[in-house]
Length: 422
Image 1: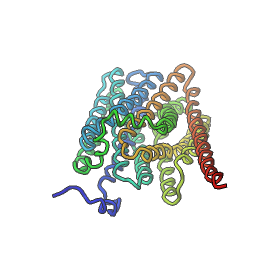
Image 2 (image 1 turned 90 degrees about the vertical axis):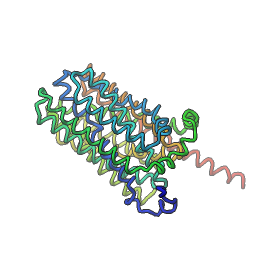
Image 3 (image 1 turned 60 degrees about the vertical axis):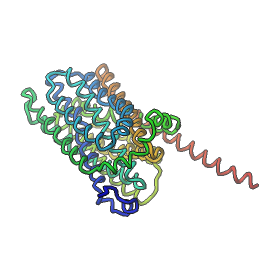
Image 4 (image 1 turned 45 degrees about the horizontal axis):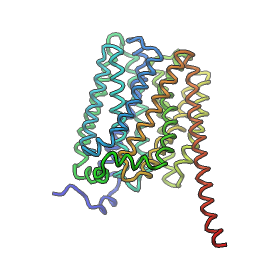
């Protein structure tokens, strides 16, 4: 029996009956839940391994910098082995990295564990985005925002659960490690789901256009497009802001308001709740009106900068929670909008394009975490954290400049034929 469905049946089939949609949403949910496991664990690393602010910045630097390896090799890996096998192997590797960190006897093992963990997470993100870009043509913006909503839900539940566990166990007796061991079982379940949901024939069909092109030729064709550089600059700035925000706002609140690990983790959870609300609202709006991705990025980045700044100067823990959740709502649209830009501009080359873009984005996140950690170690986290609103404001400014340039270009092109007719 043929596993493939005719093209007209695929397009007519309701999206909610497609098992690949549920796989995508499950992957987004799980990645969101475990993405911030390392910064949530900073209090226990500080107690058990005597980690400094700079060393915490090194953890996040390695976590995000490893995505560059995923960016350089992810497209080739998917094209060579197929999305089905690549995803199953990567999810298994993700489970192994969680076990490695949970069983670390000293801080020196946490560092390579953070690198491997970041590599696995970035690879899963690239594969998820590639699956959306190839399978849901014509529904890209809607599916990207649905995946973003699931990511926000996972990011709300995961940090709160892990932070609560760390707070309620005796860290010196290694009870915190069980949180990592339990988390490792979830990617293994997803690996089985992916193996059953992605028939070989369907995956080969979707990946076929890229598998026919040699990897370096494919990379060269993408790098010849000026658009990839413009989008990458935006992704770099977005990564700088978000990497610093998720890594060190918890440390700022612990210093300013003397909160425990669970209360610091609630900060990330409330931010993710804000992301959920923001992405849900935006998914509803974009489903009814066509709004350009650039307009969304410019508007949300500007208000993100304002709310991040307001969070830094907040006078109470609860007002800071509210403002950080509001910042999460505003910044939630930037990532899906950038992904939508990449998916639309590089159709047929999505695996390599997403791998390259994810690598650059995470290099920004690595730089943001490292810079704030280094400055915070010398001048105090309350000074280093100001890089977050600075990077967000820079993102808004450059996006507005790009929008104005495009409008000027379009108006000039429109005037050209009129002058010829005159």
